[in-house]
Structure formats: structure tokens, C-alpha cells
Length: 412
Image 1 (cartoon, rainbow, N blue to C red):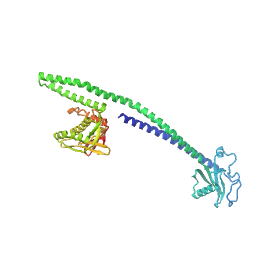
Image 2: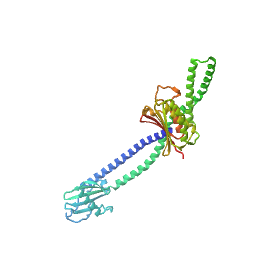
Image 3: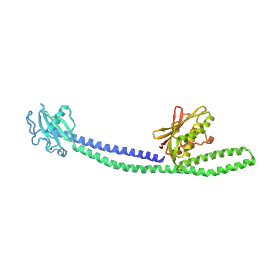
Image 4: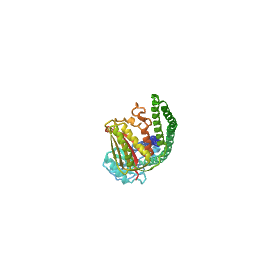
């Protein structure tokens, strides 16, 4: 139980921390990328606004590059000087007047020309193409298509992502150990309290067993001395109730604290054997007991405890069925599990109460206080036995039925 609680707490803490970490990294990355992109767009706009052709060729001239053709004005800002710009100027008649490759071989004149013509045909004024931020500007006699190399931004973004993944992975490992530490600190007091409670139940059961036996023996002696007596009968009744409660407490303590001796069990035969005596009990209560038990279903468990489990579930179903109803017990294979289900006709149990059915001393009818020797420990014992034999127990309500389902791993 506490292992599951630890896992849930670790998962919850990690989920919150991962979301915070991931959200922080995403905000930093997006903010950095947007800021660098906007800065480059501003530089490109400044470049386009300041661009002029120093020696204006004939508008019908041929393609060529002139010295100082980038058209950068004197005294331009350092960022403009450090940035790599490319440009293509095209006349109104569609002739390429000039191509500036910025004296680097990354993009050839033909590549830039083809790219510029495609951009002009698309009608877009700005955008990104082939790691280049572009801007189209009408300069009157010609059209300027200017490019700014965006490679640095992309490389910086890639580097940021790589470092984020590396440090994020390291952070997750550290956060996992932190979450485990916090989970242990959170669960430790609960586990200690639960262990003390279990120990108290065990100790109380053993300590009360002897006084109850002594009281019973003295009652028998007094009955022989003075005969039938109303007060002695009342004492005997209450002592019997207390003895039944002590027995159930000891059974619960044994199921929770003692590791059962496991063996290969023919569960089909065991369930069938425990069902037969309850046919008479069901008949006496005006009920019909229907059984559907598949053969050759083997599990690994403790036969004494499993017999007690079947008995508890059948007794619970018979007690909570109205006269004229029926109780159904079924054992079958489902994939790699043996599934035992016991169902009875009865009022639907609210979901809020279903969560507490397997707790100690819990009863759906609070008006019942230990009548017929039942104190709300039966299902708690059933759960302890199921978990001790590596199984899972659950309850569900459907079609006017209350059904308890137990699953055990199959043993070939």
C-alpha cells in the first residue's frame, strides 16, 4: 500500500517539477528566438533603407557586381558591419542589375538570383527562405531583394536546445532523487502510524483472549452453582461477542503480518469445496446459490487463507441478499489470471462508500453494531489475504448486483 503511495507521490512531484522546468526552458528559448529574429529583421530593414547603388548602371544592363556594391553607408552601426547581407537588384523590366554575394561562397549569384525571382513572383514582402531572412523593397527605378544570413540564429537555437536537453536530463535525475526523498519523508509518519495500529490490533487481540476465556470459564462455574440466570445470560452473550471480535482481530493480524506458506493449489477444487456447505446456508435463508467454476485453474497461494477468503465472500453475499434472491459464484480464466467473482442482488453501494469497504470496522449500515458476530472486519481480512497471496480484490455494482472480484496470477 505504501509502495503505491510513494510511487504516486514521486510521480506527482516529478510531474509538477518537469512541467515547471519544461515551461521555463520553453519560455527562455522562445523569448531568445523571438528577440534575435526581431533584431535581425530590424537590421535587415535598416540595411534596405540605407541601400543605394553607387554607380547606377543602365537599367537594361547585364548582371554584374561592382566594387563596394553592397551600398552600405559610411558610419553604419557595428551590428550592420558584423552581419552578413546578400542582395539582388532587379529592374522594372525584370532584368537583374546586380547581385551581391558578400564576398563569401555560401550562396552563388545564380542561387541568389533564382531565389530573388521566386520571391518577387510570390508577391511576399518578407519572410524566411533557406536560412535567409529576406525583405523586398521598391526603390523606384528597381526592386531590391535583400537577405540576411540567419544561420547564426539557427545554430544558437540548436546549441540552446542541446544544452537544454543535457542539463534537463541531469536535472530530471536529480529531481527524481529529490522526489523520492520527499516521498519517503511524507509517507514515513503515515507508515509508522499504520504499523503501530497493526501492532496494537495484534497485541490487543492476544491480551484480550485470556480474560475472555477466564470470564467464560467462570460463567460456566456460576451457571452450575446457581442455574439459569438472566444476568449470567447477558454476560455470556456479551462475552461471546467479544470472543468473536478477538478471533477476527487475530485473523486480521495474522493475514497482515504473517507471510503465508505458498504452494501450488487447485483453485477450482478449493472453491468448489468451500461452496458446497453454503448451499445449505443459502437455502435456509431463502436464497439460490448458483456456481460456475472452471476446472484445472491453478494458482500459487496458501490453501487455508484462500478457503477463508472464499468463505468470507460467500458469507458476506448471503448476509446482504434479500429473501428469494440468488448468489452467484464464478471462477474462470482471463488471460494470465484466475478470476473469482461473488455477486448478490442488493442495493447499489455508492462510490464514496466503495472506497472504504475494505477498511477495518467499516459498515455501510452504521446502525448495525456487531450483530451476528460481524464487526466490519470480514472484508478487511479478505483484502489482507488477497494481497498476501499476490492478488487484487475489488468491488463493483451493476444491474442491481454487488460483485466482489478477486484476481490471482495463474500458475501453470
